[in-house]
Length: 113
Ligand SMILES: C[C@H](O)[C@H](O)[C@H]1CNC2=NC(N)=NC(=O)C2=N1
Image (cartoon, rainbow, N blue to C red; front, side, top):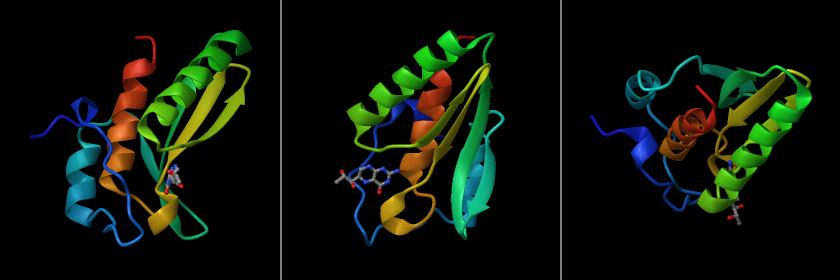
């Protein structure tokens, strides 16, 4: 099976296909503690990362932001004291694309274990 965190995002086009149910199920096996949530009928990958304070949460937020810029693919990030909520979806297609699963896996790689 292809390792998501080792892959790079492809340029996403407006006619790119949404991830199928089978692809989603397969790629979810490589992700830890990510949930699929629908917001305004748009599916997104969501995970809450825990921290001991705000400073560490902010540092992680900035790392995720740098990752996003490097991939030209951007999440929604909610930064709070003690936790950061990261949500990935593809705006252009209004849902989940393989890029979102790759980005979620790469986001996990940034979290201090
Ligand atoms: C022009 C710019 O590259 C595009 O709008 C990119 C920017 N980052 C993006 N991020 C996400 N999550 N979805 C997109 O469709 C998207 N499009």
